[in-house]
Image 1: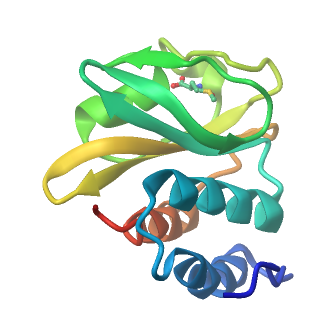
Image 2: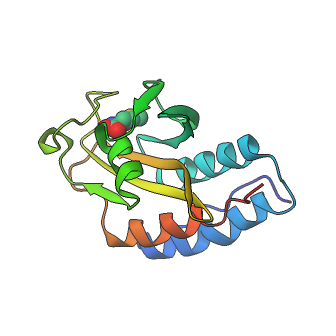
Length: 158
Ligand code: SME
């Protein structure tokens, strides 16, 4: 496995299409969950330079901070709280164009302006969420949803 990421220029779609096989390569043959979540966060950060990108993982009634790239963040989020807890409760991806207009948004950083949260399913069960924050308003769209959902679907379930 090559450890250097090949950074793609071009449209958002082209960037994701170049990144996905590289993430598959990073995950290939590696069963350790923390290692895989760490490398997915790093790969997304390197390609897109997102303000904050990482995982919260389900533990009982809360999400607990997992591997991420970016500024320090809050460690625990209750089900239904904030964008992350909302995506967990609803079981669907949430795109928030302006976090200040999202009731209950948890501001880990005042620089964060928009956000996408993608639930991670192992089978029928949500085991965590991928959270990506941007310092720009309305940064995320259906293209991000499509490809980030594909990326979390690559996480080995073991
Ligand atoms: N803003 C998130 C909390 C996590 S941080 O952004 C890293 C939310 O409202 O769920």
